[in-house]
Length: 85
Image (tube, rainbow, N blue to C red; front, side):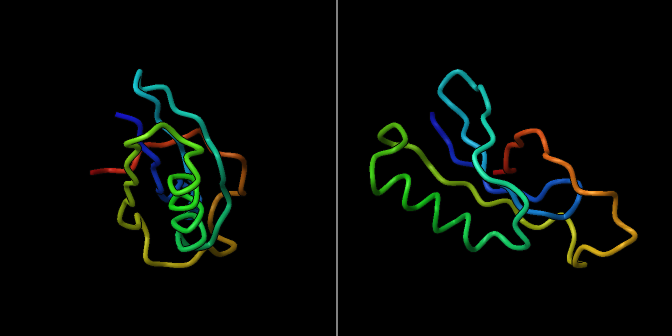
């Protein structure tokens, strides 16, 4: 089943990844401070049929409740990540 995953990466930023039926992951968007915009984007992709019919959206719980600060590792483009169901 195709899935849009919204998850927090190791630098506390949020990302949107697409998982196809074969389990391959593709990073769509990254470096967001919260998941709100990504959830809107995911809903828009589904509504406009930009992803396969039946694609589900999974939003992972935050991995950290502390905002990003200077003690965090420098930001770099993350690998795509699955959201925990």
